[in-house]
Amino acid sequence: MNTIIRKSVLSVAGLAFAGGVFAGPIAAHAATPTMDAKPVAMAVQSAPKPQGDQSHITLNDEQTANVKAIIAATKKAGMPERAAVISIATSLQESKLENLGHLGDMNDHDSLGLFQQRPSSGWGTPEQITNPEYSTTAFLKGLKQVDGWQDMPLTQAAQTVQVSAYPDAYAQWEQQATDLVTQYWNS
Image 1 (cartoon, one colour):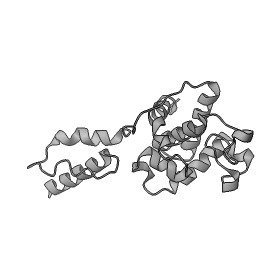
Image 2 (spheres, helix red, strand yellow):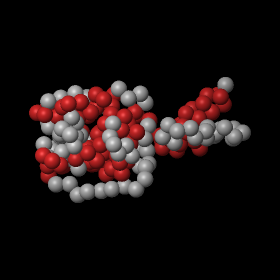
Image 3 (cartoon, rainbow, N blue to C red):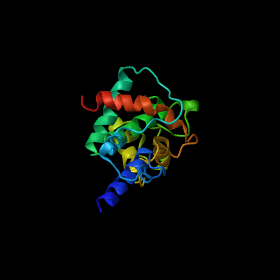
Image 4 (cartoon, helix red, strand yellow):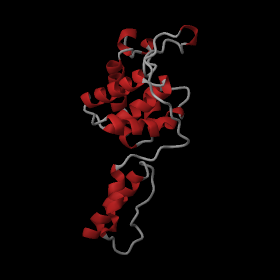
């Protein structure tokens, strides 16, 4: 019975480690599972490896304040660090962490704020979605409605909420978003 339980736990750990994509049970072919599997369980707790080439920008004081606002709103919503990573990566893609107002002819429809949310799509009023706490909370509310968001690739989780014309673009910001959450989550 113990062997079956250990194989089941190792199978789940193997799947989680692969980012939720079927990777097969790690110990399926082992005659007897051993305690050497502990590092696998520990690896599950770490952040997934970012997908693809990564981008990075240097942040100014306003952008750093927006990172802190996103983290504060995530904590206030009772969501984990992974939600903050997804939120920050999304904002990096959408606005480079700048709380954008109406950009005239350069505007994408009526998109505003950190997440380029649109009043005409029901995200809120222009005043609301240019408020970092409100816009983050609105994004997180959408994220909560995505089944399995915690285990899916960042770009898939972000795209499911944002419905962008460039669905794979969010992935390039995962490492910087992870670094920012690591830096500011406990500050």
